Length: 74
Image (cartoon, rainbow, N blue to C red; front, side, top):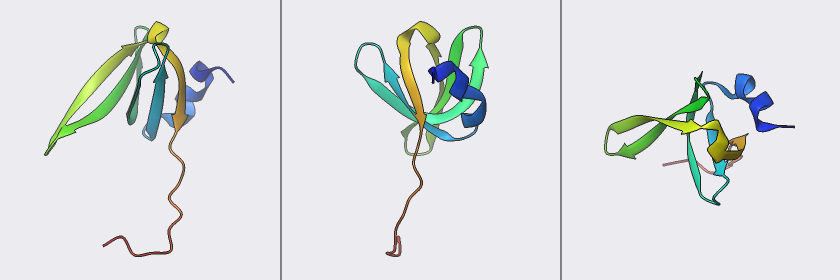
């Protein structure tokens, strides 16, 4: 399925992005605007940034898989 068809079902969820140059990024998909993917990314400490990625830069996007753990997370 082309990645553009995944956008609507992934808005508000964590995603991984594969770029055509081989790099990647991850964050929460906030939506699209003017041919750009809008992604909230963690920077450091309590800072986040809304990043914009042009559609032509993107090879694929995928939602994060669920965590399956039997151990307490503390």
